[in-house]
Length: 219
Image 1 (cartoon, rainbow, N blue to C red):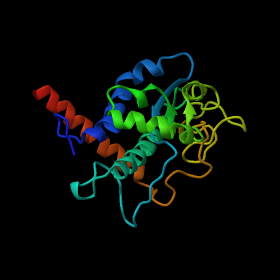
Image 2 (image 1 turned 90 degrees about the vertical axis):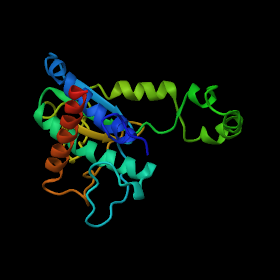
Image 3 (image 1 turned 135 degrees about the vertical axis):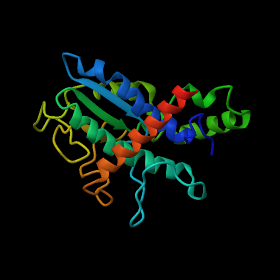
Image 4 (image 1 turned 180 degrees about the horizontal axis):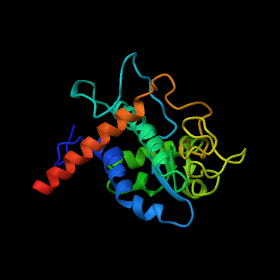
């Protein structure tokens, strides 16, 4: 479990906190666009891991329960609600999409930075993996499609040609989608969603980012 200079879990920083800071820093320019601006975050948009009764997956996991799955759960949970809040704040201006791209066929698998055994194993496994892999070309086409009118900013477009938001609202401005840009047909995190979920995520995130800003200023 590695940490950043600010004391943040490195994976949570990479997958969540730094991305929200990046969006904040660019929101002024994005809002000034004469047409709808689009924010696309690539990780695990359509993935929802199981949440235990009473669990509130906000913040980095404890060391005792730390795992890739736990990091993914907390990242996806918080990103869903922070995107809904941002879509509300930037209504009519910015669309927010969190996408799970699936397994994408690219040069990384055969990179010399990988161990020789992995590269050899991948050559054997690739024909099997190709059944559910996405080509780089198709993945690129999907990413471009996320910048179309199918995923509008909140309050700009409605109708059967626009996507359902994570709150199951037509053209709601915040979308959690799969590797083909396919949105969920039900409310995201419905079983864990509470009236104050978005508020709690927002307050936590802004607190962490403010703390990191102060640490950097002091250093």
